[in-house]
Image (cartoon, rainbow, N blue to C red; front, side, top):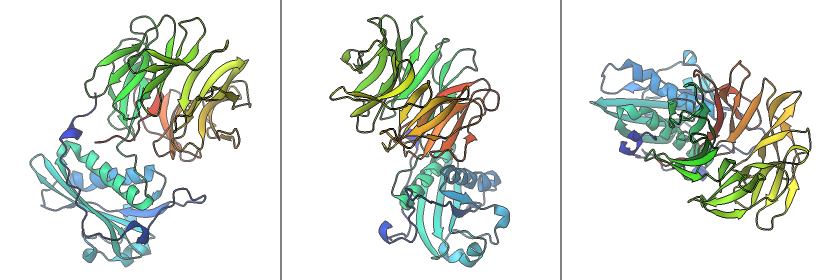
Length: 434
């Protein structure tokens, strides 16, 4: 069930003393530049404005922000040990020369005030070479929502510097077997706060976020048959979407949220269907003697990639939904599966067999520019971040299945979850409205 503290968060989003239009600002990050270098940034300890003696917040708050910014791959964090100064909050209290000397191009300062269970944060972003403030924000909310406030400022930084929305209030759904059953869990984008959201005491598979992030479709064997359910994250209620005889598996929402695509074998052969939100069949998309599974849609909803064994081994195909024409996308190897279409529309990530192990690849929708991204252990179930810059996936490179994240080009692969049991089938949420 989604954390309702977010709904109670009363946040003052006051822009402080900044009037420079984005087009005139010195700092603008072209995230599509072919040779983008990480920008050196210094994030200072936050000031205890009212001198409450809360030293924990002094360092923990900026550490959350620092981790957020580094997570994107757009920024390079400078070690606090290299800092030559302990600046105040405002421009007049900063010796910008000292920050330029250690290579910082951007500087973040911040302060906090605590009144009972209410936390107020003031945070500022500065251009050290221009000796100017780029962004200033003030947030106020409940103490337990301090991470949300920091994530909001990180989102504001990304939006201001790149023109795109940030991903710091997104979540990742995944399957974990720590209870002895495969259940559905959700964690924040960085792996923080994992929590169980189903208790089916059975096998749960294939989570899929609705486009608005309010629901997750999944397959469960809780009634003995593989049926598809939809979990409402606000009410906590799961409803059965598809329970036709045979298989009801691999749900995937269309970009409009109007339909759920799924593989059904009610007529004997596993084919992909479009279902209304009430579970009624709208349209049969595939009709082939092979097994067709794992649908994923282009951002405009006009094309569907899916897996079929119609040519012998499992390969990925693309269908033009309006006309029904299908073409084969993958040709390398005999086993390619788990396609997922980038929200930018420019690439499809998938899993392919290489040397007896599963690895993650990306390819353009026209079949060109195949790239292998992983090489260690087995790597499965890729899923794109909403900005198309990152991929989450599961890997057993450390002996058990865990959740990892990497840049879209395969660099900076790192584990984001440390839980008991195995974690599988991660799915990145859309941007969520808090």
